[in-house]
Length: 522
Image (cartoon, rainbow, N blue to C red; front, top):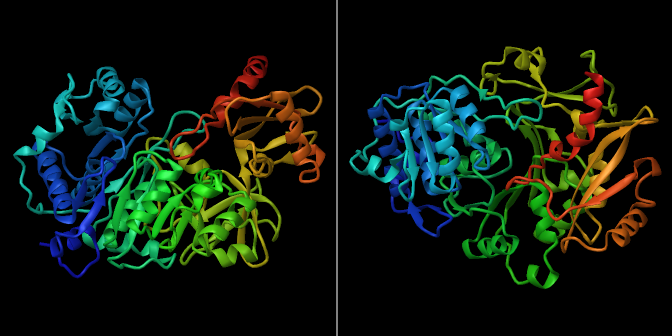
């Protein structure tokens, strides 16, 4: 059996099996021992199916204890866990099943319809397809599959990995694949748990992590798993409901959570009297990433929760930069400074490093652990590289103290009359209007200027008087933005196309305006 001297969930669970591991979305509390037994049974069952180290296990699951157990199983058996967005259609799931080469597939009753279609389209072996919850035709029962399996720690344990698929801003998604490290799972978990320590998070048994975002996202799964490896309890919700989140913060005395800026906005949009009802003083680390955060939103969150807000810059492929509340207040708008062992460079289109304060493409250095490839796409892998550095396609600059500032994604930049305009800057102003719940800015064709600025706004109380709100929004941004950055037109919608983690599918709004142009070019 593996040495107990390393820091990992498996070691904590063997030492203190009665301690709380997680509270699932259905309200059930799982002890460390119960979660350990679940992940051990999964390993034995998958090995019985014939899976070997290096094989992939795919999942289309909502947030659940079983999902976490599946991660822990893969991580100690040398498998690649392939999490999939539960909103994907049958053909989209089929593509990832085939591309990943998955040897086992797990879904839930809520995702069974698309999963069944994916199995039929891809020709996946139904004997290796399992459904959690109620039985569904075409799947084996998860509960029956595990019923006869051993709860003992498996032998010949080996470190596994998660192979996340990029969201596919252009073309089909690609798997971000890293080589399986030749190390025992406990040692690897201990090394992974060093990442939260960059933020000052320690292995204290009283710490509780809250998760209100989908586990199929890289950062979400990373923070849940690392929290378990640090010995923290984890509380998981299925979806983000701002008042329910505050209730959980108070009830479980939550000390860490991971959010994105849209979740901060939703918290701040709660009426003041509701916000004041809940004690959030237990929070030690509110971590956020994924998109530029409007400075006024960040200040308001710090005023509310105190100087416990930490921002970092990274991607599915790696990272990155980090800053605490004080550093951000001293460098407003920054996403951080290169963390220990990381390096950030700003390069122009020719690959030359630009001067301090000058904008360019952000590149981050890869380490031996973070080195990756896009599965089956050598060209995409090489196109995003410059030596030992890779880019996620973001534009930004460094100040004279080494702090990184994001401008926007390169693909989202608007070029109007030869001027570069960054939608994120405009969105940061729009979102502060009291009647704006969400917004999106992008470029649409203009025969004279090349592109013009279009805004789509989701009002707080649904659709309202468009003409009045349009006028008030333009009055609001007057004096806050140069006129060249004003939207030429504003559309209103009941709901912007975001996934549950807050990721905005901007292409769905932008692409229809460019279809005719693409046809002309062709």
